[in-house]
Length: 225
Image 1 (tube, rainbow, N blue to C red):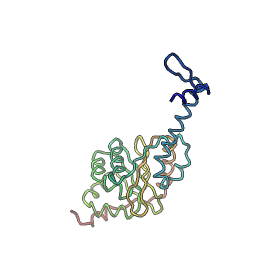
Image 2 (image 1 turned 135 degrees about the horizontal axis):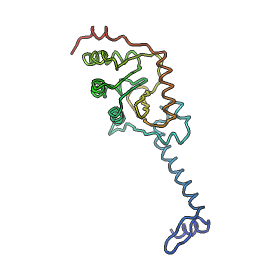
Image 3 (image 1 turned 180 degrees about the vertical axis):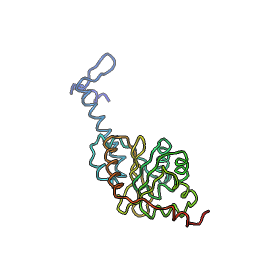
Image 4 (image 1 turned 120 degrees about the vertical axis):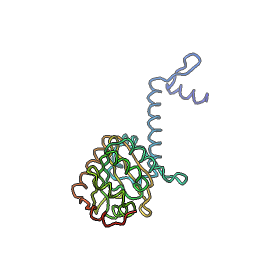
């Protein structure tokens, strides 16, 4: 420790003040730089495990935007941690717009989704046709009830990104899916304005080409529970 303090003193990074050392302006500059470096290393560490699933637009954002990302990763002892994080965000919103919500995420949240729609939360989902058919066949009664609500809209699109993008009141979520199993590997959420702007543009581009799903007749033909 003494050798380190002597080295800092030789470099004019610190001065001795009675029984303690205080940083000089040079020392404060170095300390600030070290703090920035530590923040970058910590951000890189949390992004490393999800980097391969990130949208190209997110990886192109400046570092300052990366540091605003909250990343929740599935672990062997907590495989549903990303779903739990998503549910906590859903409980705080009054609107949900979601591009590729995907069965692996929404199936585990179905009870909450049903409750939110009953409470008047406005929801618009754009997903693949096979995902809509899954929910209609798995939850015929509640799916039919949800479809009849004016504030619940289902659209379908055949060419969606490999990740999910959700727009809630106060944040954007990005769902990272395992390509082979379809499970939710991680959930990213952020209130960064740059990410919000990107997500709005992405959603609206796909919404313009999406088709409204005519599920009412199909729902009437599905056997009820």
